[in-house]
Image (cartoon, rainbow, N blue to C red):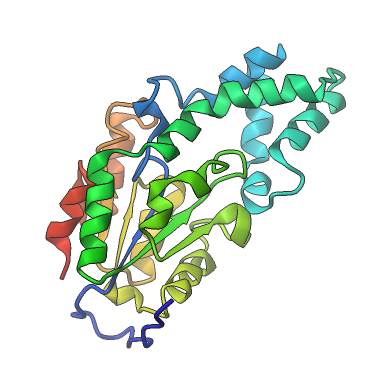
Length: 249
């Protein structure tokens, strides 16, 4: 990969040299495949005949660990949970539950919207570096190698491989380094705002920071109040990813 020189962070008028995107609900959204795709844990609990509320609590509590490492696998973690609560399940049961949970994620990654592919192609045509910075577990992104998006970006930093999760500063610095050491002040950040990613990007000097509102407006993933709050954390708010082109410096 071409290595760009590190640019001075104090310069706030640098032309845009790179764009870093979040993945889920920014470039792809499972809810475009199925309206209730975000009810991931409910489908798993139902498939495994588990108490949905208890499983949801465990799932939330274990999110950080799942997003940082591929081992144990998500299937192994679920099987261990079932055994621990006295409801052991076979490997086949767990795999069926994961398929029920994540089949919409697979389709979303493999078949992203045409306007997303078009926007990424335009950024590449303008000789900009393009990166992905995503918090995800290994099962959510199992289809990533088959995604056409993967062939249109210069670097992808997925937390389950890097061990770094947003909003940790090291996660952002890692993707900047992977893009050749480009300065945050020469890098646009685009995301749906989950995990405090927009606030962290602004604090680290990304310019501009863009809230991708389009996918989360009607998919049930965020409340209207949350969406309004997220819009105040960014420099710009967009509903389509190709709108990022108008904010390039």
